[in-house]
Length: 193
Ligand SMILES: Cc1cc2nc3c(=O)[nH]c(=O)nc-3n(C[C@H](O)[C@H](O)[C@H](O)COP(=O)(O)O)c2cc1C
Image (cartoon, protein in one colour):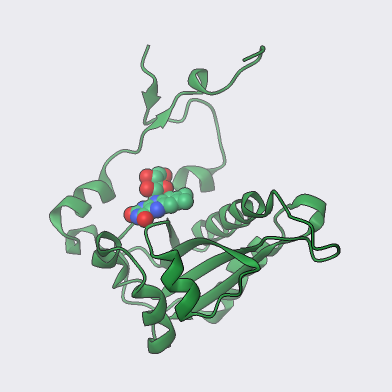
């Protein structure tokens, strides 16, 4: 039996179907109201003890210095296409609970959930979010003065989807290729492991 498929096996929300991590961006800024809605979606994500451990640092392309500080930390393979993204967002998770300073073991888990909410909100507003782990977390901490209390999450490149034909050939292919996922039989259990 095939263990991967490019088709949805069962019905899901159209936003889930539509979302994908694109790399081509239009030369068009993201409106401030839409930026606010992205973080509003993250705000309403669930979290352990309702701690809401996430923080976001964003830079629009017209904030040249700030945007470049984030951009400069990216790996070369990401820089090739992120150069056209009008909005960069660094996501952070507070390591300890505010009320007792004990370790919050689910802080990054909660941040991931908030980023997923943000991504689907973006999809609904016609925006593309591309999350990246490919950057120098040490450099980002230094260059943006991120305190030790925060774990570094991902950097997200956000903007309106652009023309894939303007990407380098290898990235262009990936932009339009079908996406594959493991089928449910390989990761969903209904008996002991
Ligand atoms: C934590 C995380 C780190 C990622 N890092 C990168 C990255 O550095 N560069 C990149 O091009 N894509 C990166 N991605 C995007 C994944 O490659 C992408 O989500 C995956 O291939 C599935 O494709 P889809 O999002 O279009 O469905 C990352 C995604 C996540 C969630």
